[in-house]
Image (cartoon, rainbow, N blue to C red; front, side):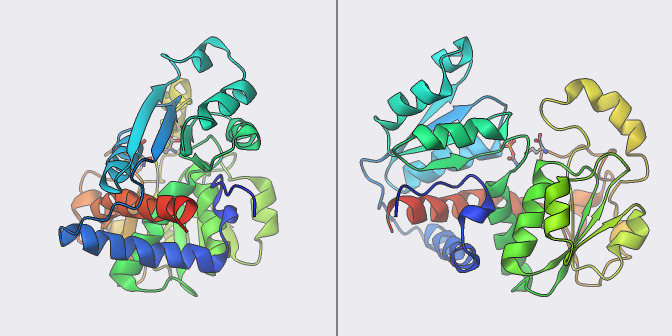
Length: 301
Ligand code: CP
Ligand code: NVA
């Protein structure tokens, strides 16, 4: 098989996705036990960031170091990418010197083009369309708190954004149902809705959408790159806030997830992250473990 990339969750089979979740849990235990595991000695990762990041940068950089390798932070501001050097040329050059490349950018086509010209695995660390790394951590978090998600129902409240598109992919691969509740005009990708109409249901009323669900998730109303729309979106998303009171309408053992950063008082109430049903900080920590499992999968196996 040629070089394997991770541009969307669909680059994994359902079995591979499940194996990664299990492996992420093992790597978490090994780290908690202080076990040193360095299969990536002498390996280098280039991390290209065209958007801001806390979790993604820290988790990939720490993860590479813990696996015995090295990570190199490249911001588009300080590289020739920011001065218009073509992706195709950058991909050929960078991938000739490192073992894996991680990219956070705007257009999804950028990571596809980079991957086409790269001789090493390329990982999508968020585009305008997808955020697959986050779903690895999210699914690990659900699994460690509640077990298998197969046959369960999750609900996405708010913007049909990059996270929401990746949730649809996860639902299809791991075989769960997904309610999506967004204001009109903020739906996820139409093609994904059509393709997965058997398991994805669109709602407009959050109280109706959370009924019978086992997992509630949301995200900011204005994503990176939409800053100038933020004020208008606050109005358009009125009523789409997730709060403990809304959680009370879900199943009794439902958990709450948010990829972070969160805006208290907007998509979540002030007290949502402190609610006992919130597993958000385990979810955030799992970025480290899940991506170490991904790196091992792409580079060692
Ligand atoms: N959730 C997430 O990707 O966070 P960062 O933007 O901080 O990387
Ligand atoms: N939808 C958000 C996710 C941030 C991790 C964004 O793209 O900004």
